[in-house]
Length: 263
Ligand SMILES: [Zn+2]
Image (cartoon, rainbow, N blue to C red):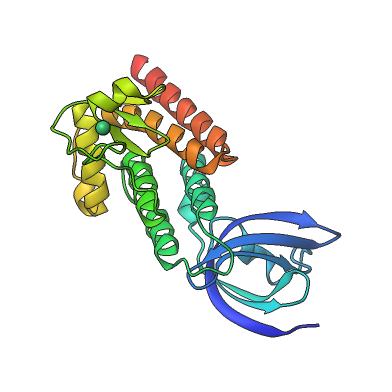
């Protein structure tokens, strides 16, 4: 029995087939957070809904709340992100950002800031030349919005203000450690160079327009990537399904660039 209909917008994260012709679709929306709802008949060739529900689509939809699983009754595409879907490398990055955003959003919980961060980054992914720094921007802003902002100004253990230097990043306390705490803690974490620390602070505080103007960040991004991926694992306590795909595509892209250079 249908109880009420909610209208909202959402970004499709994934879907799984169910029964003969249905799909269960996961989305995130600004007003109701994580949505899991069934799209009845959406796998039938003539379905009006099917084409609008591909992962990484920005849609407008109506959802009927029922006693069992919610049901999508209407859906319309706002932006299909065609350029992303036609490029495996962009798609791997978009899938990773979408899955990551979903991990930090709760059901029936307003998630405006995370929703608009993901939407902004999907739009940027289609136009910016340096997508590596865009991913770091997305991850670090997501941490800040979710209450996991890495502590980069004071020691995350004793609170002493840190002078410019390289420090270890501790995954349990979620930030840098002063040299005294580094000696006292059993597994202090991964080392970050002074320039990587500066870059993380810059990304935390600035908008993407300013960040995209930075030059020669490649080596620093590799160093930051190690810390962020371990920090993420410690927060989520799981490996994201899209991460191996992202790493594989990144590796293949790197390889084909190198062999082009050799030729
Ligand atoms: Zn300390």
